[in-house]
Length: 136
Image 1 (spheres, one colour):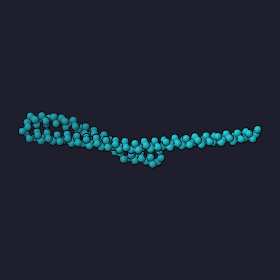
Image 2 (spheres, one colour; image 1 turned 90 degrees about the vertical axis):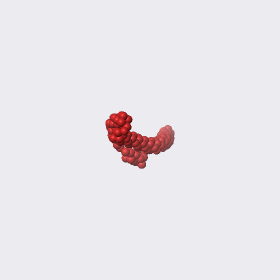
Image 3 (cartoon, helix red, strand yellow; image 1 turned 30 degrees about the horizontal axis):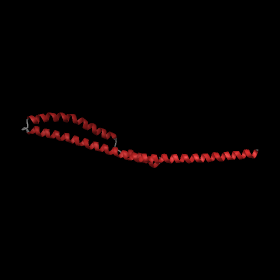
């Protein structure tokens, strides 16, 4: 790979978000969910036991909305991660194709070097034989 190809790898690495960002977002969502689930259970029971009491209905609606926000944030985060993975996969296909081309060039050059070496050895052998013949 030449310098341009190395720059492709560096550009790819620099254009990707830091994985710790995804991890921190998921940890935050994960830490919020258990307490919300507990509140959901509590207010679900309160609301269904006392449907006429408006405060329980409002609290139940609020906690339900909070859970939906976490679900939405988790969906968004998952999509972001999948988008990054897709970008990496596309770039890796391009890089892999360039590696295949470079390997083919290398193989061709090695073949040419082998031909040159063979011709060189043949010429050296002819010279050596001519020298031997001239002494005989």
